[in-house]
Image 1 (cartoon, rainbow, N blue to C red):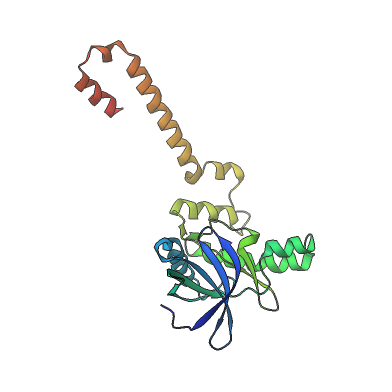
Image 2: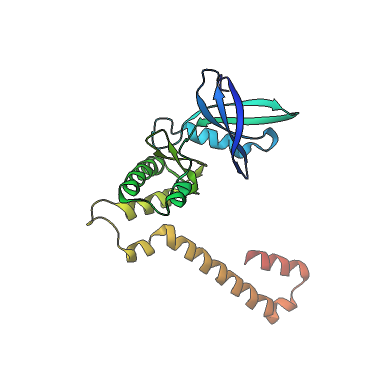
Length: 224
């Protein structure tokens, strides 16, 4: 657990997993505290573990630790996060009705650098959107937030690598990607299920099945 002393301030955000409040540490440093009831904090605890994997990446929001507090007779689990004074990217876009090119370039580069680290370590951000891109500091540096432990399979990793290969001669075409095992495996599963369903329908309509005892029917159907 974190040893940072802090005092809770006003609420600055709400979500399915709890609330986010502005807080001040005992050395007068502003942080954001994401809190939920301890009994419902499994997802928040996983988020903290996931953020710990990327403490060395400056394009991902920093986590300073976690603690448990008792407030208004409720036991709360809290993760202590870097405070984004600039809000989120969705708010920034809406406020200005679009962004000038130089801001788009700056934010895009930061987001892509962060995603490269996430993907490079075998993870994927399952909810990457402007609301989850926070603008930190006076320079409003874009940082990825709200990370969850969405682990990529080996096939998914290979598929993404084939999509974004920098060498145009090595990068796969659309036709090749459509036949990649990551995509085609789903099709195979669907075809296998359909064949199994058709086989079962044919079997159930067959006269041979009607002649069998109930016990033998069940065994035969289970094998399909």
